[in-house]
Amino acid sequence: MDAWTPKAKHVSGYIQECYDASANWHSLSSFFESHGYFLYDYPSLQKGAMPPKSPLPSADISASSDPYPYARLTTSEDEHLAFPFIQSMRVWPARDTQGRESILRCVAETYGLAWGRSQIPSRLVMPASESDELEVYKRLNSPQARQDPRNHTVPVLEWLEHDGACVHRNAEVRWDIIALARPQVFFRNVSELFAVAETLFEGLEFLHEKRIAHRDIFETNVVMNAIVDVDAYYYDLRDPAKVRYAYIDYDRSLALPEDTDIRTASTPRLMGAQNCYMRVKEGPCNPFKDDVRALAYTLERSIRHIEDAVPEIGTFFEKLVRGEESAIPTASDALETLRNILSRLSSSQLEHAPTGLFWYPGRIKSLEDDPEAWDALTRFRNN
Image (tube, rainbow, N blue to C red; front, side, top):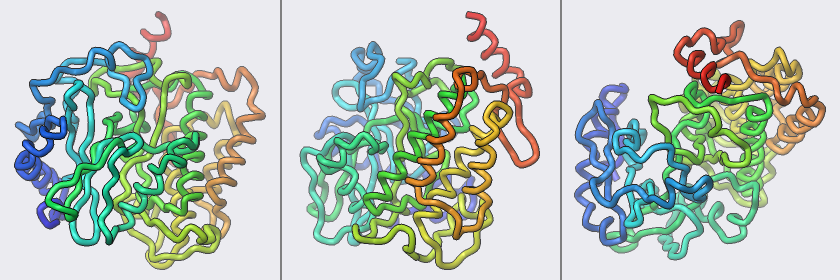
């Protein structure tokens, strides 16, 4: 497990470790190819991971407006399909024999590793002793769970066993890494901003119903069903008829007993980056309330700038992000409040085109503050 676990304490060292980890992945390339997966290459720290020369990207995926569970492709050029950065030593991009973009994920268990490919698993092999991460995947990918429309998680397609029952490989479909805080992928109106918030609170309600506390809700752990050119701008990718948002990454998650009372649960607080940013204190916490606060904190930056058109949204975020911990509602209650606000909005409010880009305490970064983004948006609107 040590070879798959970062040890660096600084970003530069962590990036180098991820680059070095490519050797671990490529040592298993023949194994993955035997199961129909061809690994991306990581030739340079500056370029990120590049697609394999063969097979070529799927023409069917490129031509489809909704190739679920696979992502919509906005480009078929290798340089634009490059995995922009390796965010984890235990995650690696690949392309399957049909040219579909996938993610291979190493999932920790008590005595080894596990891996998988996303959608309903046809061959789910679980070791006798499982970590919470494996239990999370089991709960989210049962046939019943996958049929629930509130299950906004990237589905697991299959589990690939390697080295007996000690190491497994999980392959998932590849969706875009960052669905929020992405200036290049515009929100056209207030309605589209509410759609992402409603989807993620609904997804959190589902996780908590399954007694899963995510514990690492962050902008990089919320994805959307598109793979984009990181240097281009997009105007209609968030069309509610086509877009899907989902949670990923459960290596820090808890899978508590299914009779756990989510209102009174208590565990030691995991002091990850998000909790440090929110300046919460170490010690015991309700992990479900921490999830609600973390999601609100994540959404606030990308959404609260519409407070000029929807004044109630400010109060909504203040309570969740800066309120007393004892007053933080459940995900279900927060979702109900959000939907009540949404139900009272007029057509003109829903169609209002946001002028802000990001909200920060005491100030708003407007679209006009980013000349390149403003020029791109103006061109889209004029066309």
